[in-house]
Image (cartoon, rainbow, N blue to C red):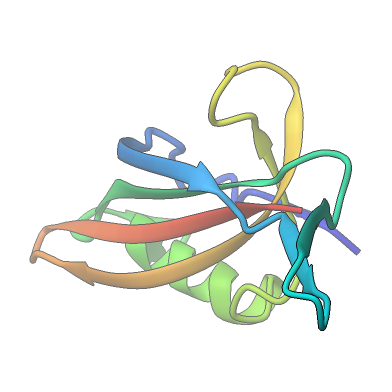
Length: 119
C-alpha cells in the first residue's frame, strides 16, 4: 500500500536531473533484422534531486533529518513501498514514486541526494 510523504519533512527539492526509464525492448531475428517495441504505453521518468533538512532543531523528539531516516527505514521500508508526491515536473496532482536515498552530507543542515522513479 502506498504512503504519503512524511509531514515533518519538507519537499523543497532542488538540483533536479531527469530522464526516462528504459521503455523499449529489441528482438533480433536470425536474418539480422531487429524490431524494437514498447514495454509500456506510457514512458516512466526518473529524477535525481537534492533536499536540505535541518539536523539541529527537534520537532516531536526528532530533527527533520532524523524524521526522514525514520520514515525511510520504517514506513516505506528502504524505498520498497511507493510514495505519493506532488508531481515533480508539473507541480500539480499526485504521482506515485519509488524513493531511494543515495546519501547525504553536512552537519547542522544535511543535503540529501534522492532518486525518484515514477511507478
